[in-house]
Amino acid sequence: MSKTKVIHPDRDPAFATGAYSDGVIAGGFLFISGQAAVDFKTSQFVLGSIEEETHLTLTNIKAIIESAGATMDDVVKCTAHLADIADFDRYNVVYASYFPGIKPARTTVQSVLAEGLKVEIDCIVKLPA
Image 1 (cartoon, rainbow, N blue to C red):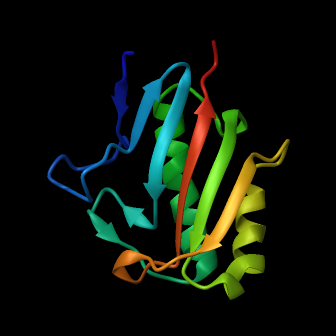
Image 2 (image 1 turned 90 degrees about the vertical axis):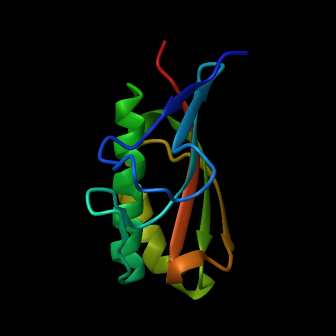
């Protein structure tokens, strides 16, 4: 099986966030690692409200998806980790705005997140033929 690494288009090569790829293409799918509220131009986490962090997280996911030649409409599955499940309704409003058509399948759980982050989202994207 062949795999292709995909990186956020604004990622500074010196910005190491862990032992993983932003995304990997395999078998016609793009698998995106958990993304968070990161400003890839400055290599800094950007802490804020759940709405702000969700928006930046999904903006980062969108950039990775587009760099692989797909769109948010091609997302088929997401997993979201919230630091506080009480933020679900506010997170969900922002999340839903990124998927105006058929929503991807999704799992949302409460998790302990690094760096004081409020949200982390990973997803699977079916790449266009």
